[in-house]
Length: 386
Ligand code: NDP
Ligand code: MG
Image 1 (tube, rainbow, N blue to C red):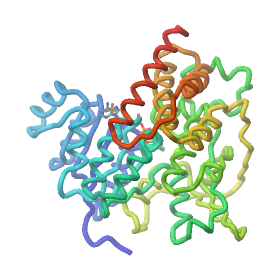
Image 2 (tube, protein in one colour):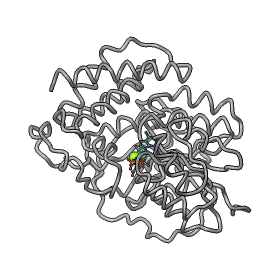
Image 3 (cartoon, rainbow, N blue to C red):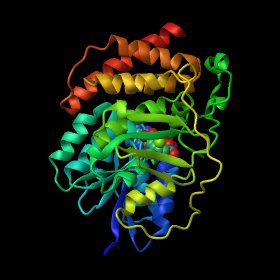
Image 4 (spheres, helix red, strand yellow):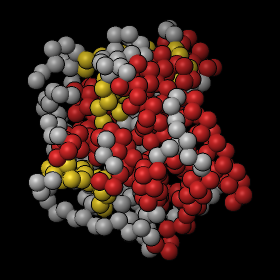
């Protein structure tokens, strides 16, 4: 199928790793895609350049004063804060909203896009982990809206599951590179430095937070829950394998024994293109996947204790995924700031999860109340460590 008109695309987090690669995808398909909205956090200089490239695009940045300065410089209004992103995400005359911000702050703009009936190209896994029921509830109430996965493993499963009944699925497999510390002795993991943690072996130039999450496999813990929510599969049917080459991104094993896998190079432009142009599949300018010299390893729980937390939270539900996510956002940030050792991240998340009283999250307010509690608990632990 071919798109009959150009799709009008909003890119939230346009200055980040996902956002910049999405802009490359748009540039590769000028006849199919058009940028109509952009948001950034603090990199206002980069957004200013983009505002010149896309003179009609609605704009938002994090800070109010920066928004005023940018508005004066580019001669049009610029929103700020969450409300600014929400306005860009929910604007009229938009077809697809790419949510490429990092962290659960993507919740409000995601809900705005869903409520406006948009197709949501979705990279922002933290939002789904924190607020899966809220997001899926909003989707169910907005018949035109759809969630199109961008995270490479979930894009892979989405592509493999197309046209297949869910009851025919025995299990799905998410692959993991193993992150920067894959080959470091287990007894030296706890003392890894920021530079060592950020040296990802296969996926280039990801944001810092997801690269930390990749080093302890918290990223995969989040992704197990992301798969549960996106595809309606219990976490016990979502398996994780270390696959150092990052060539296969996801597999689906059907109950008749047949297996479908999606293969590609470690290049996020591919899953971004799949989502932005879905269901169209035009030529792309970048090289495709090679399927030589693959390797799979079982996940060693001593090296990657974060993964079990994802399963625990996914099984328990009732707010525990949101607690895992909030605690991890704080702990990863504190590690990046040099306040705690790498080895403290997972024990801190586990300790905050242990204090959680199960509850149901029906509204955004419910999510944020629990999120605030988990952040405060984690921050208090950080102070104790320091
Ligand atoms: P980056 O850190 O590179 O980018 C984050 C983006 O969010 C930036 O544009 C940043 O703006 C913006 N942002 C940060 N804080 C705020 C704020 N307070 N208000 C508004 N905007 C803000 O992250 P990634 O691109 O790596 O990741 C984005 C999401 O995609 C994450 O959820 C991640 O898990 C997911 N993902 C990423 C992959 C990757 O390869 N990078 C792969 C799969 C999933 P600024 O830079 O201007 O401050
Ligand atoms: Mg992924």
